[in-house]
Image (cartoon, rainbow, N blue to C red; front, side, top):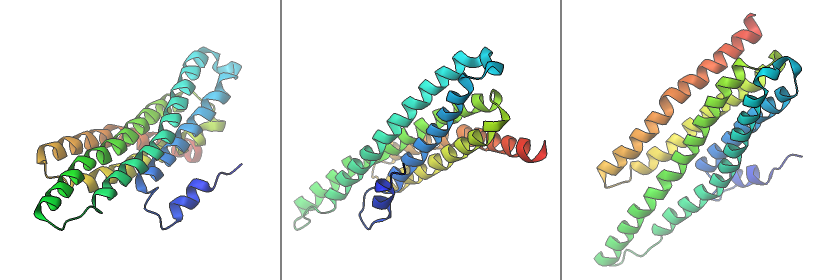
Length: 206
């Protein structure tokens, strides 16, 4: 049942997959955990009044999971395009300029993919908030795990944004990417931590 292929590839000395792919994979796990909770709750008579919302949550989480799995490959492709520019010749001034221009263009994609990962993880956290308020205590730990995994994935993806914006010549574009990144870190991360803390209190303190 365990698919070790991606994890083994991540552990190898290959440049891809890397941190962005790892973040997307963690986010996909967070979405899967949330979907599991939703699927369990749909069949519970005690929670029949939120069954439709539960189904909608599962649909949203399934979409996020599918997208994050796509983003694993997209992140590898974006990094590969960037890395390819570093292998271009710098023998002449003209070649050096062309290489630098190619690098700067590739950095855009290398920022956009982790930002997409962050956006999906923010969606997962939003759904986790609903699940935490409308689920059985028997699956509450899974909701907390989903939220904290999504937060970790968010923060991991943010590092991939920042390492690339640091290489950008265009300060305006770099600042725009960094602002999007900070916005995605702010409220979603705080919400995820709140969910986790409340779940932990409910399990330990109630």
